[in-house]
Image (cartoon, rainbow, N blue to C red; front, side):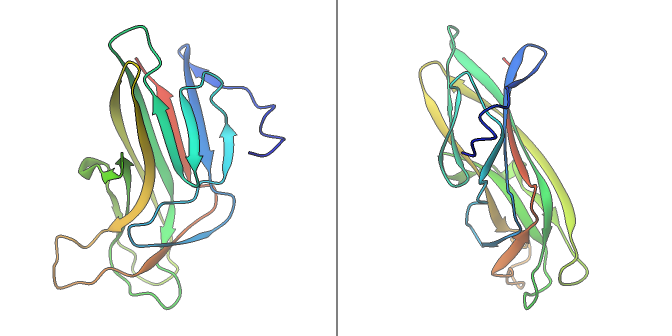
Length: 168
């Protein structure tokens, strides 16, 4: 974590804590690999969200109730890099390593290096005292068409973000 980030306070929306992780440069991401969020733009001061690896977060069920509920939002600009095949490309949110199908956001560019914005979110329930791992990955956006091979990697533009907001 950057020293200048440590001074940033947790943003509270309606009294509920929120944390945000961003990319600081354009990243070439291979199919089925994690987006490397490398900067904490809004740290979680409650201990509920902990970055454990490049792009992987642990979300804790810190609550006196039976569960804690979180909204996880992924947004960013993606493109097929030079030399890639122009096909549908997609990002999705994973929970404990499994892609949540409802979270997959697909963009179909018309040309190489044409960026498109994706935005997707999931609401997850974490039982009290338990944890889940969350990440964002480049997934096959062509899986509905077996005749099309997905491009092997995409470019994720800097300032893509993964936001975790405690909602209940």
